[in-house]
Amino acid sequence: MPPIAGAAPPLTAPSPPFAAIIPPLTDRSFPAAPPETSFAPMSNVLFLGLPSHGHINPTLGLVSELVRRGERVVYFASPAFKNDLERAGAEVRFYGADLDLFTQKGKILDFLSEADHLIGDMLEQIEDETFEYIVHSAAFPFAGAVQQILQVPNISSLAVFAGLNAFLEKPLDDLTREAYANLKRHLNKKYAVTLPDNPYALLFNTGVVNLVYTSKYFAAPLTDFDDTFKFVGPPVYDRGDHTGFPFERLQGKKVLYISLGTVFSQHNPGLYDVFTDAFAGWDGIVVMAAYNVGNVKAPDNFIVRPYVPQNQVLQRATAAITHAGMNSLNDLIHYEVPFVSLPMGADQPLLAKRAAELGATIVLDARTVTAEALKTATQRVVTDPDIKESLARIHGSFEEAGGYPWAVAEIFAAVKERAPQPRRPQQVQ
Image (cartoon, rainbow, N blue to C red; front, side, top):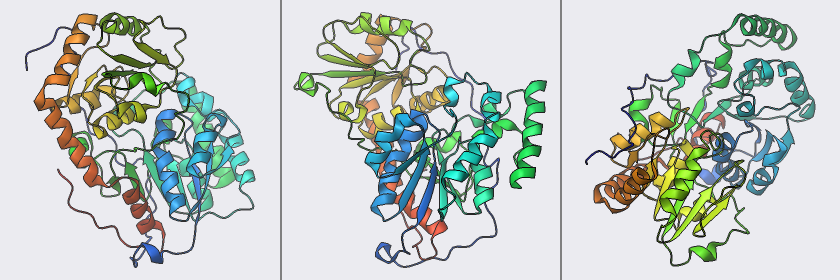
């Protein structure tokens, strides 16, 4: 495949991410059991979500499947996610502090200072309840502390799995180091809990089972995980919140979908001008998500919304342009939509690089991409049969991973005394 002007420079090979900063529970055995119909009685499940679309959205289908299998789920989040979580079947509680770490511009002191209040408020809200196990976002900073207090098994949900080592190697300033040391001593004295030495490790909590929302085939070169990490495939789930979108405009048309996600939607505002310049003449409809971007001047063939029902649009899409975030990449591959990648930060460069290594995308440099390069790359991913074949191969590995039913089977095998051990075909390596 010849090079494209504006293509991203080669990326250095990633170092394997950390495997387990906060160790899972040990010396605990859970015997195997008969089939699904003979599960132990309903369990109360405490779910601790990190209030961010990228972390909560993958858990919605997990909540739905747990509830379908008879569990009661009490989910801590922020009010912005209440409707989605209740539609999935959870009982929603709210944290007593702002835990959307992505709005705090990396200031770890901002959430460390809330630790005592937040943990105490949560314990007060659940003081009259008993929970059999915890499910939490790996990045929920106090998952390890809550697990130690409640003394029940914990299951970790990893919205991010690539490139974690680099994050953990970030230097600490003296103020943060001293504040964290004081917090460790205070929480140990008050709750008898032990926190990791590195405060950044609070954002990577592991459990007796660690759910990774991709396949071994896709993730293999990017991970160094032990067998507690279960690759369960993409978190595809219909959130049921697509009312009001003009799907009739897509009928019988070629559809191009553009999204830079939520966290990075404002990272490079100039890209929206590149998009409109490149596809003003697109022979069809361009659906563009512009979360928290403000007014975007777009041609008549564009539908621009702050929120777009992504799964429903992708079922109709001809091609897509993406930031290559984990959730978006999963959805694109699940629906086998050819896509161009414009990674901007976090794990996106590694994920885009891996998709390109497998022949499933073209990666362009978001800092220098031109309208012409974007048009050329989009046309190529639509027409190249090798790209379509590569997408189908990764999609097949996703199907083999089993999805939410397998995720719940892995959870039950770890925490329920009479749950069957999961049995699945060998995944593609």
